[in-house]
Length: 366
Image 1: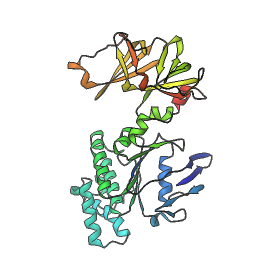
Image 2 (image 1 turned 180 degrees about the vertical axis):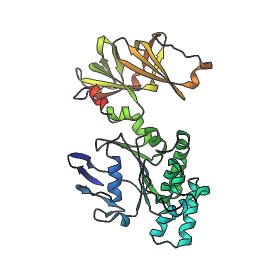
Image 3 (image 1 turned 135 degrees about the vertical axis):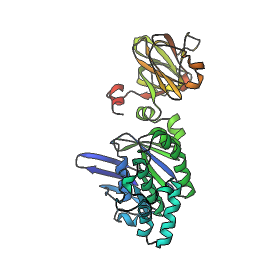
Image 4 (image 1 turned 60 degrees about the vertical axis):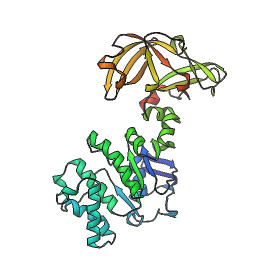
């Protein structure tokens, strides 16, 4: 698609979006609620029409083609299963609608149901299944259609956490084995990073960044991407001076930190961003000049990680994540109200231009 715009009255759902998807690629559209993810899928599927721009599939314009003539299968969040048909009949419906013989269509349906672990429920009706099972039936119906382009709208959203994690890998493997091109919408950044060849980050109908999981995580293009994908600490300051390959950033209350970035001029307002897992805590200041005094405010257990929330002496909050495996016999290295030093490696810090409306306003929109 090239410069595609879609409006709903006064709301711009997509704003001049350009996106090129290669055959066999698994693409995740990642963004918060209201960013335009589902609208993008519905445009590709032909369920809504663009107000401007060009949409092509396999190098042919499809703007005027009906949905059934586009060679795509759309799996919506609401499942859209036929309540009067069994699971097997629901899945066989797609190949039958595309002209496949009945025996062949049902053979395909049974094969796909085995892929999504529902072979034993082929005689059940949709109202006899859990939400997660219904979602897998909808996914199976899309795969059974034989379409080369599969559009998935939050396909794992109704599954419990354990099954969702298991099916991420299985879903990607299944799509690759079938050589399908997939556009997968999600608001779950961990899901996108696990499953995608390419991630497209959307915000307010505009593409913020396109790249691999590694690229987007390691080199975020904006404060929004740095916060939405992986989470970061953000500190406002002013560039005090630059020297060699680094800059000294002056924070509130006279705190200074060194950043391995000299792309901003002296006196420029900037935001320092550093990943939470790259932010470490120590009990003593060390030779690293980025050792900032702080006090532990809160401790959160996040399964494989423990997150500390600390208050710097300039009253700004910073979070530090440490692997739970590093906590010996459940003894936490720090407790609430402990005095600590926050250590930030200059190479782990990134600089962004200060947002026109301020950092707090920028983070509130995420």
